[in-house]
Image (cartoon, helix red, strand yellow):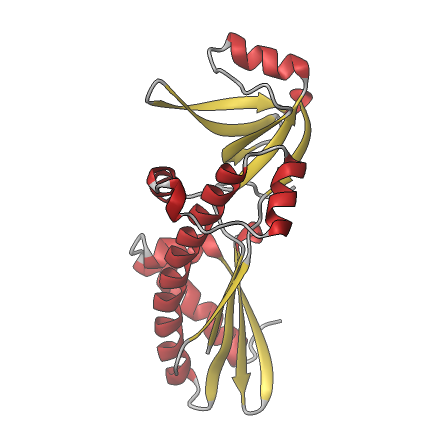
Length: 83
Length: 145
């Protein structure tokens, strides 16, 4: 399993997943993909960071509600260091 | 010595910084990046802020790697005068350092979990530092199985 800790991901949630998050008090955008910062991953799902009303929360989204995850791995950067 | 940072992460400090940058100061997206943002269903501004945070995060990873590389090279010279580090590469998605060393015209590869480097460089663990240097010595002196 890929270690997604601290990665920025775009998650496609199922309708049910979106509904559950709204029930939990998070105002999910209406667009199918949602961007999250991953706190950690587990066999049960993704622990993601959410900010609501100025407070930070860590929320578990079960894999059952996740249809796809796109990981923003980022770019390659190279620098020379003089010996 | 070449330092390569392959990828970036979403550090909370960098995200906060990116969120406070005025939209006009963000690096404009290329047409290709705009197309990717559209396909992913995220706004161009969100994409640009994400890239900004990523680049700032890479700055931090470069600094960490530079510090580590300096210490590693110093120890490497103590182990073997003719040895040098050619490249130190951090593969962020794998949380792993991959280090290429040249010793008497021979290439050696040394892998290390990033967590160990963090505990040593940022956490100040002398014990982990010793473990890293022991591993390096084992690889360089060919005592690995």
